[in-house]
Length: 179
Image 1 (cartoon, rainbow, N blue to C red):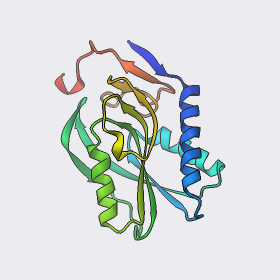
Image 2: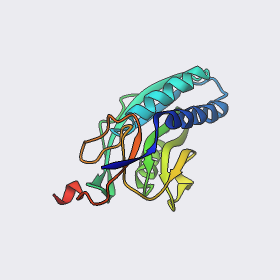
Image 3: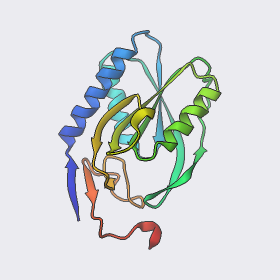
């Protein structure tokens, strides 16, 4: 049904490298508010925050529920739900997402935080598909082929999030939004 793209060890190495790079840029000692874009970010964000703590970065975790997909395709709009109930003025924010596809979600959410007075808003993404404009990403884990992937938090119609690896969905399987 699916080919493995990245195994658990490869993911662990990518996350540690990201944490090292972020920690090097977070030398001011101020806590870093890590804001995960639900639901796909959960395993990645948890591992990233543990790794950041290991590098001496004080983290505060918040979540933002966003929706920008209909099935396997971008809807072209971003809906933001369940806003953090914290003061954002002058805060160091790191937005964490699982995968960069169109970049629309990260751009809109970063703008949302800047408009509310965040001091610095940076972005971190585990994966980017080849050919995407990664200019919106400050910290990118790795680039993958332009395929639909699941596992390690990413889903196909709410399935496969629990997988400890990232796999490529069989392209012959129909899009859940078309079923």
